[in-house]
Amino acid sequence: MNDAFRSGLVFVLLLVSMGIGMFVRARLSERHNNRETIELVGLAITMLVTFAALVMSLLIYSVKGAFDQANTDMATFAGRIVELDQCFRNYGPPTEDARVLLRSYTATVIATTWPEQPKPPGSNYAIGALPISPGAMESQKLGAIINAIGLDIRRLHPGTGIQNGLGVTCLADFENFDQARWTINEEARSTISMPFFVVLVFWLMVIFVCFGLNAPRTTFVFMTIALCALSISSAVFVMLDMDTPFSGTIIVSSQPMRNAYADITRPYVYRSVAP
Image: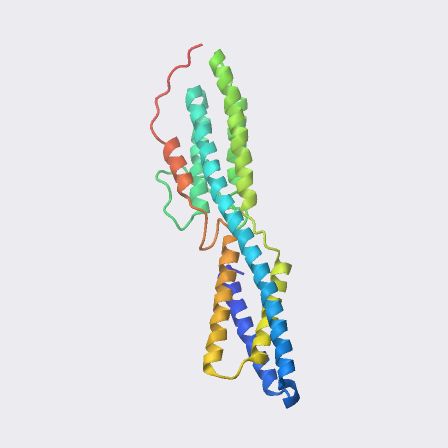
């Protein structure tokens, strides 16, 4: 069930709830329309609206913070790729196979994570590297590429003192890169609990039932409440869409990864590493 469908369903449920309230109001006896009853219902609506608004604002704030963190972590991840590639370049030709794998990994991540955007130039794509789940960056194929890069680093046989130090640095850079990668993979998952979301929608439905109980049956009132329902459902859409930062309409920018790919594919001439 995609985010647009769920937010549209919320909109329909709120309108139905309002209709239920109006339907019940039309069948209430006159003794239920006195001033004391209306004031009590108004107080109940105020309490429910305040509570629901507080919960929704905190939830949106949490989702927005997680989305911004995913943007920051993506930039960090792209930087780790550049650092690792630079260490490979400094080491020399023995790391060329690892560099090819790193370029393939980066190109494939861009192509599969942002499939609706232009693919990076070249043909460094791993075939069959679809994500494990929608919105995720990881796949078994990409995991195998990362494992191969790690093995290539551990197979290095330094010939000089400088190469020995660079080998240790490359391994440390690889571990930092792998840690950043897992951080991104975890952030790709939704954090909103579905039972909690269902309860929140139920609260909103109760509020709109109360609106229908108090509202006169006029076109202007109906349009006003419908606009309120539309505003709430659009906020729900933004909240759900931002909760999955690598899928949907609002997604993390691909520019850091594209900048990293441009950097690791630029021409480079190896220089011999002297002792």
